[in-house]
Amino acid sequence: MQVMTPRGPALVEIDEAADPRLLLVLTHGSAGSVDAPDLLAVRDAALAAGATVARVTQAFRVAGARAPGSPAKQDDAWEIVLGELRAGRERLPLVQGGRSNGARVACRTAKAVGAAAVVALAFPLHPPGKPERSRADELRGAGVDVLVVNGDRDPFGIPDAADAARLVVLPGENHDLKRDPARVGEVVTDWIMRYA
Image 1: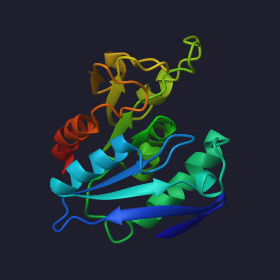
Image 2 (image 1 turned 60 degrees about the vertical axis):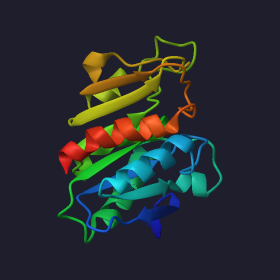
Image 3 (image 1 turned 45 degrees about the vertical axis):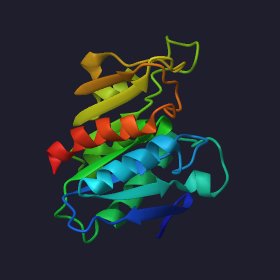
């Protein structure tokens, strides 16, 4: 599925559950793709639990850019994509999320799109080596419950447990969360299905 935004087309891959109880929308990090191991593991586990899962390649990545640019423009484009995805699925509770930059977008737009909760994988608390440039306000400002899953070796930092509804820190994991993606899928699915 392609959705036109002011920043160009976004691409959406949808895996429909047979009898969906929830709509889970996921997106990538700045330079990543929707085929990241953790996103695929979350998709597989959530689909098996009865969630329809949409993975969104944002317009800036479709255009070949490695950086999202203005947060306001990124968020506007995201809201358009979510509006299209919700059409015909309004009865399903929405949980949205992503990895790294995608987690930030999900937090910033949660209220605007009517999300029940947010999944923040490898939330980039600050740029590596610059803890004074904290992004914790994005977590606190989500306005909905946020699950944060980070690795204990993430150079982007680990959010404080008080800034999320639930914080899970996985030992031995880095920012890519690819050491044990199935574990990431289990943690996320156990948590999101409470909103179904």
